[in-house]
Length: 355
Ligand code: SF4
Image (cartoon, rainbow, N blue to C red):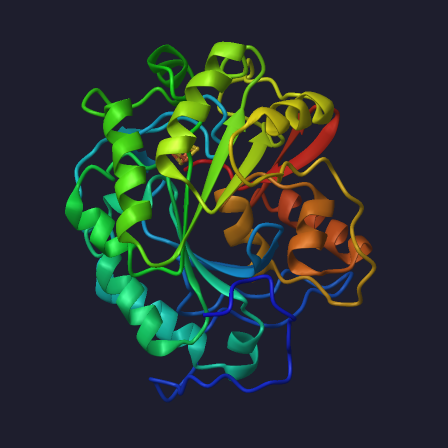
């Protein structure tokens, strides 16, 4: 298994053969200044987004398993807003066949498939709540040789079935923001039946049982989970879990709760140095958009903005698109009320409004 990031090739043919004769992928017509927004495809991919440039994973195709917003947590920093379905019930929220069919339709185009470094299973909520998770990972492993990553909040890891399904992935990226019950409840606001110790034990068991990489993410919110007692408790948990990587993050995009404040980069680095294990800071402290010539497409931008608020620079960095035309397209989408603008920390973010 080769882990991302890898060199991105736009010319190599994908080794995966098409499973359907015709491509029903979203329109690949780029947006040109002064032109109307490209038509939406007749059969849009509702559950796939990207590929987007992820600092953690490389060029990542997102697969969203749940309707917004279905989660076992209601984190104060969540970029998706408040949890509307706070649940620990596993079920097939979206038919597994529909998700596998969209994956197949994406893979029909070998040039587009070859751009992907990693397939990332995520959700507008917590992906392990989807009872078809194992089948979807198996489907991806059968159809592509690229690594499969799964993002999770770890709340269902006490279930052996969930751990066995996650063990099929190449990379599991769980979050563990706090190891003290009071901080855990404040930052993650879990469903009643979620137990912190069961999460920590589940993470340690996954590390022992799984064959892939475990990259633990900790997101720090100022004054909530950043005290000396929090760091001591986190270190106790980290020694038990032994993740392959520990990624430190803080609030960057507009959070669910306005009181969820970020740490400074200095404070984050200070905490990072105190943590037990191989740590890195992954918080995106605003970089400039790269100069590129690629034109943006509404069919790429809208699925991204449905899942997280982004600045124009974020979009350019994620999709490798040109700044001026990206901004023009965003203006058109704003005029058509397909996106809305939010000011956060003096930055303009774009987001698809909640239905
Ligand atoms: S940040 Fe993740 S775990 Fe927390 S509420 Fe949002 S989707 Fe759920």
